[in-house]
Amino acid sequence: MSPKFSSTMQRIGLNGMGYAVLGSVMFAFGLNVFITPLSLYNGGFMGISQLIRTFLLQVFHLSFGQTDIAGIIYLLINLPLIYLAWTMGKNFFVRSIITILIQTAALTLIPIPIHPIIEDYLTACIIGGIIAGTGSGLILRGGSSGGGQDILGLYFTKKFHSFSVGKMSLIINILVYGICLAMFNIEIVIYSLIYGVVYSIACDRVHIQNINMSVIIFTKKEGIPQAIMQQTGRGVTNWDGAGAYTNEHSSVLFVVISKHEVATIKRIVKEIDPNAFMVFNEGCSVSGNFIKRLDP
Image (cartoon, rainbow, N blue to C red; front, side, top):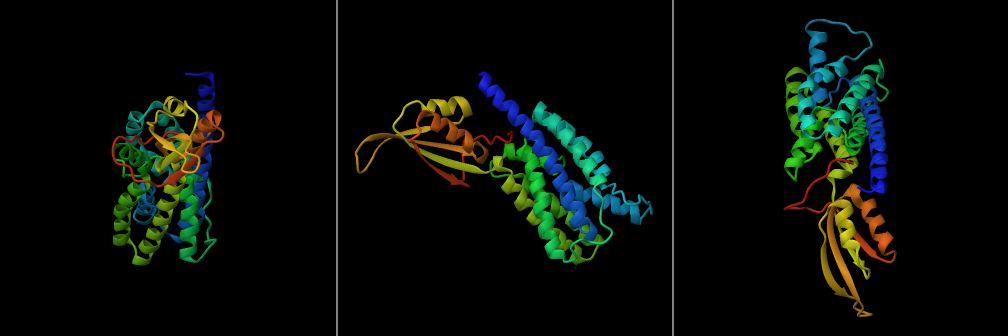
């Protein structure tokens, strides 16, 4: 492994933890400030934590003042998933534990307004969903997870190409909001669902490792396929081509990557052939031997 490559990985690791910290605070802010004051519920494991908190408050009449114990409950129910995180790699395991602790602290310390800042339910769901979903996406983008459905989502995404963390969130949300429907009025459930959908869309859009892209490269220089395969581990298809006007020979290269690898591909190509022409297509459907790399 070259010193240049190791240095790049170290920079990415630092940026990854930065994403995790920022994402954790954004998630807690979006949830505590916009969603919880309206008595709406997050999906996933956090939603389960909120339901347990509501059960403790309403059935056992426990009082915790202005402190929201949902974050602490979230930490406790994540403990069984720690082993699953360990099976997905040591770095992911360590980053996930740190992220869960930061997220728990943020959820506990960020105060919940006594009166909603935004009283319109739909507006609050959209704004809260975008902020919280972007936060979760940043956590995943940094190669970490906030626990709960994030760990499960990443695990199944590695197993099934068509899967995503956002889809896992929607599956668990069906369970959570089904319980909400039995406990509360339907208006709470509908707006919580709207929030959950916005949250899932925002999460998947920011989690760029989960977005596939195809790249077509037109070049007259040699060495690009070998450089791409060596530095990214991606396979490259090479076709012989010729310009229709000049009839000059050129190589046409095709490679499928994740969106977060775009900058790496551009750098590799430009270092060898500054005049190369590249076409990027986002959201291509892939079937076959394509490995999703969810680490940064």
